[in-house]
Image (cartoon, rainbow, N blue to C red; front, side):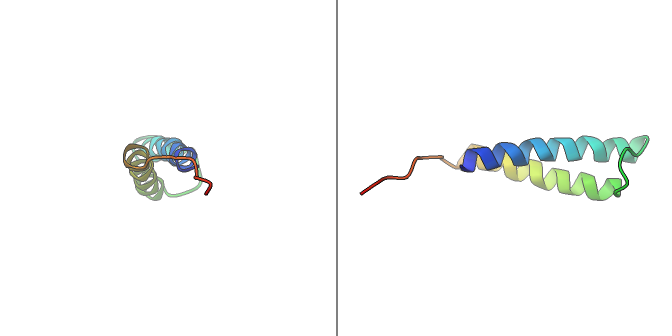
Length: 63
């Protein structure tokens, strides 16, 4: 479950980073602020990668 959430955060962060950087340096593809997209994308990307790196997804044990 944690691994799925981490993958979603990582992919969402990459998309937001790409759209944000394109909006800052080129044409804005969305109506949101490109700086907000870049900052949120960076936060989501770093949190997703760190969850993939440090969390272990183990199945629950039944006692």
